[in-house]
Image 1: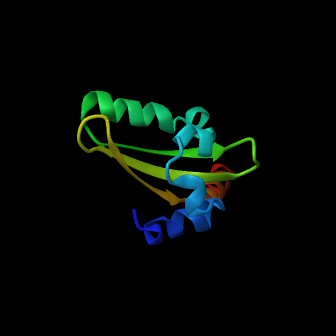
Image 2 (image 1 turned 90 degrees about the vertical axis):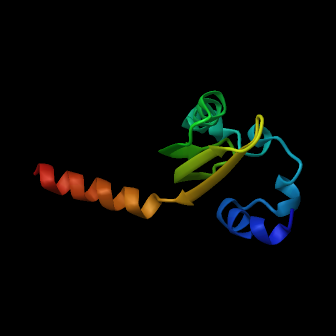
Amino acid sequence: MPTSILLPTTALTGHSPADIVGTRMLTTFPGNEEAGFLALYQQVIDSEKPGRTTNYYQDQDGFEAWFEVSAVRQGTGQLVVTFSDVAAAQKYSSNYASRTKA
């Protein structure tokens, strides 16, 4: 896999390509289970239907963000996962909601 594909991921997470390639997801990004992303991935594998969610992610290393995650099954037991940092949108939405309640 070309490391250039990983550059947006490494810039966002602070992990180098060497930290990511060849590792298990929960080892490198342990907050995936608590954030609900692991459940999404399992649902996509089991149902063979694409899935999407937006959740808050935090791990024991202090990394935290809001992510919109999409997953699509590709082949047997394989996933294509894309994600976007949506922290700014979440903050705007939260601020808007609190102003409209007043």
